[in-house]
Length: 107
Figure 1: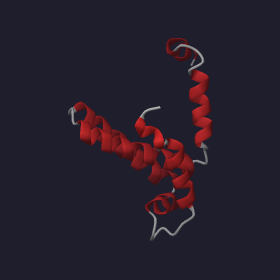
Figure 2: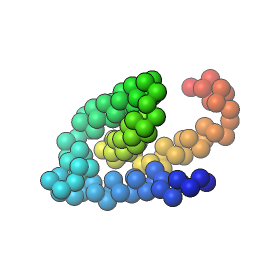
Figure 3: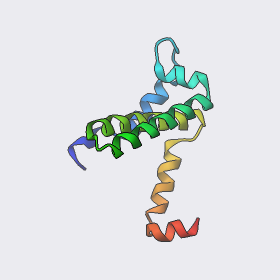
Figure 4: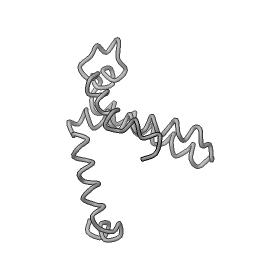
């Protein structure tokens, strides 16, 4: 573990879950979730595009910032879709049990 690993996707996910039922006037997370899955998906798409642009432009600081936004919006989308992060992590763990090329060929 590197020094940055004190904060994890699990920590971020817990924060999102704790704010999900909050007041949309007080919480951006609650407001996004109140707008529904389509809005959450739209925001995720916007952040993905912004991350790609920053990376292609070679802007490391912006890529880091946009990736943080991307992770956040991905977890909000999962919450909106009622998909636990643990299910995604289990899928990643399953995939790492064999080589990436083997895994891709099996899809």
